Length: 229
Image 1 (cartoon, rainbow, N blue to C red):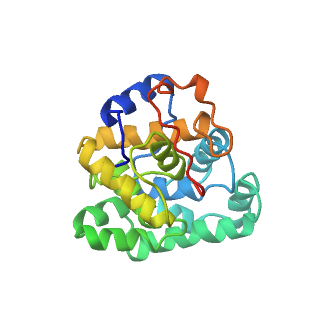
Image 2: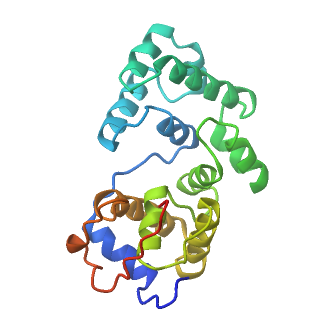
């Protein structure tokens, strides 16, 4: 927690939530993993369109993904940016893990595993590290573990809630401790915090040119500038 922190975390999330209409994300583990792997460097609007098209054309079922026609997958992958062939491989790899390790039902499997093993299984999927695994567990309602996306991490640092410095990993751990100590330990609030802080980091609390004048927290914000975030 940074020196001189004057903002209340719960009130901060509520204030930013009134400002930003954060787009909803899936709550099913397989869908959350596909959401992260649906495109390459695309915005939220395009991600949602591709995700919905995938659901309509292929379906969010591991067996259907594994059996899908290559041409159908390639058509979807091509709309998602560079390296569509690699994306198709990832989708099939995701389906294979769900079928082999998740017995076709990833949600049920994760809920039956000890938390450490559930996280380890999730980290086998492409694009899913520690923060991603905790996000899946949180959004799916399996474990209410605090987590953040990079934009949310930067926003929390700029607002002075923790002293960011050193490695990204160290900063992330410090931010998660702030959420744990000063936030609310329930799934809905933690999901809101993830969504709202991410949206604030993308829309106003930008890396290079933050738009401070439009932020309702501007007067209380210490405007901490952290290299690397």
